[in-house]
Image 1 (cartoon, one colour):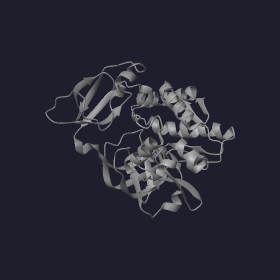
Image 2 (tube, one colour; image 1 turned 30 degrees about the horizontal axis):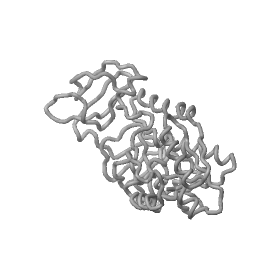
Image 3 (spheres, one colour; image 1 turned 45 degrees about the vertical axis):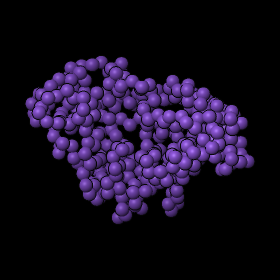
Image 4 (cartoon, rainbow, N blue to C red; image 1 turned 180 degrees about the vertical axis):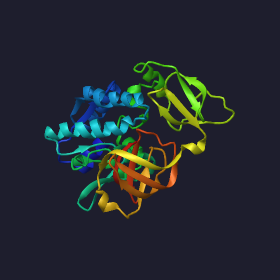
Length: 327
């Protein structure tokens, strides 16, 4: 769809090239992209980024689980590979613009470029781009931010694009359809550990890495009531479980902060925060800078905030201020 818009509407007089990133075993993606480029009569190239993808994304993913944290590989991939390294390589080769299919809008606030929520709230991907370095925004364009998914499908179908009915993929690409637990077992040897509830051992597990804060299903515990993972001690291979009320917190600390807009420019204005992709954002009460990062206090608590996930901040719950890793 982006290739169609680029050629027919946005840059009809420019040289348009379709580039597919080879990241893992995504040969099907490459073939689909090649078919679209042939249909639109534009060149197609493949950019092989398997080595940096392995080093920066898969290794990061495994490292975080070893630490007992919950990684967000898609957000880090957008930062490091898809919109980071790829944009750097392509612009160094002479391309002036890089257009992607992310559902976000690029806007200017004062003299700074940032991202805004798209027309289609169900497809909003600003959260996954919270770590993207602002220096790349001058090269990037996001044409689908002004369309809904249904409109994109309809236009693609009407234009006869060969991929108009293709199903969406929402899984982590390198899992290849496998369960997370099975994938991790290949890299982190199973090791018996304990579940602890209110100071007492209440069960055994085969490895802390298979659990995440907020998890209720699949624990295999029979305590006469639902319990949730509330903390993980990777060093001692302990998974702490507790009652639902123990999951709630109204404060997070963001490390490795990435900012599109300066904090001094948004203080005193309505800020909102998001701690997981599918978790609705909540209004911020106050922010404070510390030696470790940005401390964010919310007006209402979140449930199941997991260390290692991404925390994203928004101005007026619309414009991305920035994001960091939840510590």
